[in-house]
Length: 319
Length: 319
Image 1 (cartoon, chains in turn green, brown):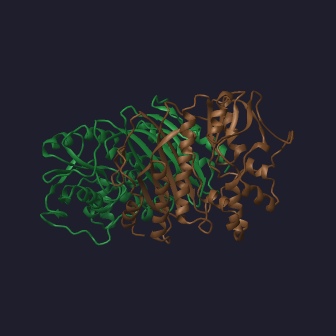
Image 2 (cartoon, each protein chain N blue to C red):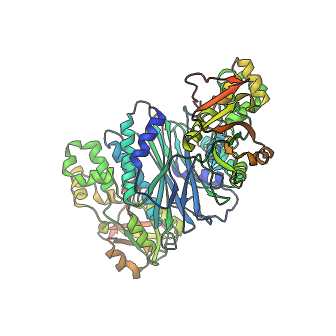
């Protein structure tokens, strides 16, 4: 790796449309951005080879795409409009420059879809390939959504079918021969789509009290909302939306689809707690109601009218 | 490592004074900051174990301190006022939580000195300890300093004595027994001090045409300024300031101190190209004039009236 040559190739690969909000992009000691609203939303998240992905299961462009998506998903959970990404790479000496450039191209494509420019970064060597992304955005509706604020009586809603990311990973690890039978699962694992537009719509809806994105699994992430909001929730596991391929693959694997939907991570869909009067509006935005917020602390999961217990140690690992 | 317990300990360790610019700090999907000026300066840089530091040469708190410093130094080179840091950690499974917390405490202390709050981050496992920091700031004088803008006739000035960082590393690698004889060199290597105040003063001085921070060595970093500004420079190596301990240690090692000053990295001091009329003001700010910008491209280095050639392959490695 010739660092300066690689940086030159990356610069060309991530060049997007001209963004008047970017005063200075890649190439100086720092980027300079226009933040007209006077408020900035900022988050950082890393994808580490061997921890969050493996190159025998995802191509470099998938990894870059996902690195952008998981960060944009955090902006979406705040209801923010994306502005820019910064990317710090750790590159093993043996990795081909063209794979690094592919990863950055994958990242830049997703960034461009959601209106973010790649404005800076850093290239270092390191033992495994790592993409650490910082996503910057602006509140778009005068307010941001947070985890705190859920209230008893709120309806819990999710932005799409759950469990596909987790099952896509399972498929790649244990059933490579069946990848073509369940393309949606593999796609959801490799290239999750951040719900940026939905997040901005939610921020503009005053009845939305709290939001989070589902990265570690419904039970775990809803738990963060409940802890921050000092309340509990009752979820009807039978109402959690799942993709038909997820249901079929779970059956093939002998897995309880409800448990997968509750504990599987890597979905990067939004979850909100919203007042009953906005439920119709959120249903029309494609969300699904799956339960309600309760005054009594704790998370109660029901299925077929009786309580469903999650298996011990059902926390999520990303790979 | 219990991720959530570690995050709790980190949160306590990095808690600084209340900053009214931080609307939402650590603990939600993203941080929310007030950017009153409407302009943001953003940069990211990583310290990777085995690449940029080794734990037998730096303690965890040194690493955290330096991770903050190298990023704040990039803000300083833009003349920006620090606002906030985000920190993505990769933590080997065998690393003790207390060492991770020490590193974060070291980082937070430096951040606090320069008025930046630690507002977010991420913890992941990984094969080696890595701190990837994103530093956010605001222009403080209505403009930012860039690498472009140097003009023929400008004076090249540096913010302090060069070569100490590189010699500190050499000392730790080859002369551990002499560490106490040259404390300044070790301190400069382990805990460089970003010239944040100087950077803001420079931005307020209209005669300063270009700036950069010296991380990879004077010759290399000045080269970036010249490339961005489409001009050349003539440097008098005999005028480059060096600390007395650097001169003595270079002599002990049989190194040409001028070459060390020109090619050694890890100094994190500012270099500017400034109009002659502001030189007096910059001298009073502690800077030293070492040469001038020329219309003719290329970097000419002189010493004792004749040209000095840099050894081939004298690029800088940080460890």
